[in-house]
Image 1 (cartoon, rainbow, N blue to C red):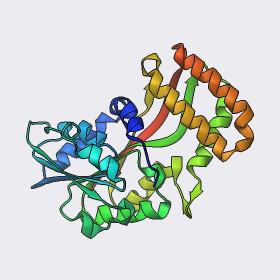
Image 2 (image 1 turned 90 degrees about the vertical axis):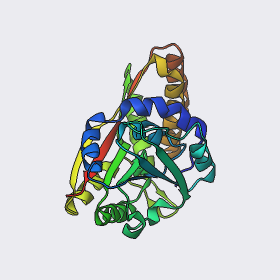
Image 3 (image 1 turned 45 degrees about the vertical axis):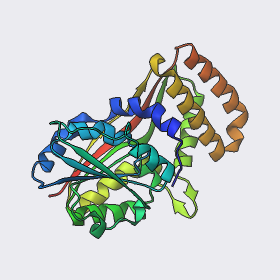
Image 4 (image 1 turned 90 degrees about the horizontal axis):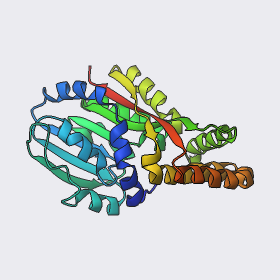
Length: 272
């Protein structure tokens, strides 16, 4: 799985929080009210930003189990200043961590879990891994909330013809084969939706776009650099034009003249 720097995760946290589809929260709350104990597993937790956002929007006393393969990120997530401090009604939130490969989770591992949650994770899975995870969640009868999965659609203003070339190459990079694994990339939500439906679960999806303007110039610049860089990694022949394109876009960003709409989707699954 991809390794992310804590600095990047911190930089995007506010944009993530603003983008998440809050209309999916009430069905989650309704399901959790039927549970004797609220246990949330945060898959690929990073520095714990999803927990900081979600715990205070869910009712009752909660126990969060943070999963990540990166021990450094788990250390960040468990720091006293990083942990969620209270639930929606002010109840205590307990936080523990498990360093593990989330692609190996099975129904037995999820026993007693109320909610499986993740942020910006699905595009890093393969179809087989997504299917196994969905099967485990449905068999364990836990709700699922997957947020901020990339959809492959980007809108920049002002537009430029080269935007499409970069976007197509980036999406191809997202769907790449790495270490023998064919990543879902921007197809992840469609695949996940279909798998959960076939398993008989109730599934909803909602848009959760980043809307980046002049007040998010640092994030926009970092995202642009990574977006163009991944496109050129996929199609090296783009590099000469892409370097000039990136310099131009970064100058617009610094001047407050660039806005970006980066589309994501959130997915909610509730046991039938």
